[in-house]
Image: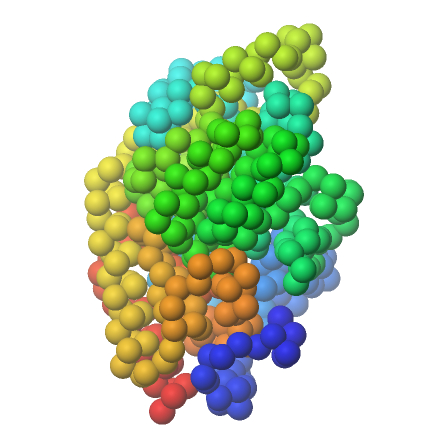
Length: 458
Ligand SMILES: Cc1ncc(COP(=O)(O)O)c(C=O)c1O
């Protein structure tokens, strides 16, 4: 974000800079072993990290992990952290949940991948049907792939070229979704879009979240194959839908013959059947990934019988392996075994019954800190997930949420927390609760957050 866009956080930038300098120095003093590894890593990996996003952590370099278990991890300097990032949801089960670990250990010795189905695939598909309502399921290795596949299917069966997405959405590295609205309301490449194959305006129509009129206009052209949405935005801060927004979305997509795809990858935090089940939504297709196999690579997409019939009618068996759907390792025995145990023994209804109140406890702690220090900030809740923004009220659109960002302040908040044993999601001020998180873990964040607000405002 450029300085011109820097928002109204009511925090003195000079104080942010001074505190950041102190925290940077503290980080360097307390993380010497990570530094040694980082120096080696820089010689063999760009930014010294195995995946480019890992360069975005606060501090001079990322902490290198020694061991992670449940809601905590320990770094190579021997420091313990409450993990509220949880691998940006990949470890929403808690790190290495015992039942999943036992299953994975066993399955590794019984065959990892054969490109043949196992009984586990049937059990998992039955469980996903029970939880999310859609009757038919397919598997991938990531949520990104699930989204790519449903977009291809939607284009194929509707014969239409375009996809509608929300402004400031994120659905994985899916070309069609890297678009935003410009000031004139046109669809343009998202800032930072790396090497788009074509101008996203050719494939995509972007509409603002909660804007029913814009959605109606986008669909009225009759060229939209699918509307791909998170039921609440979670990747530009959390933006909740207005009452009635999902009803309008469903009604308009049906009226204009576009398929409705709900991406539940992050909104699984709303409950055992995600936001969809918690709010009685009726998508044509649904996608997910990340946590559903306890961190073992896995994704899934579900569909109605009607969509499945349309697909079946339009695809020849002879071409099924070369049409752009699937992958050699997708649906492998190991991923499915991990998914079975994770869904039936880890991310259970009982686990959510513990996680949801802890999510509320975290947000209560944040709200209390904000109120005590008189800051015009807001905390938004999404079940086991919460996020605070530097605005007095909840953002209603992706653009509002994006404009509320303040990269420098966020880096300080995150570094302050990290230096006191708490890991937050690096891309924004989000926290996630896992089944192993305790009240003491949540309260530790409340305490640390309060101390920082005191330092910022006192
Ligand atoms: C809503 C949503 N969908 C899909 C994805 C892609 O997940 P992955 O990178 O694991 O493929 C993400 C990643 O953050 C996401 O937030």
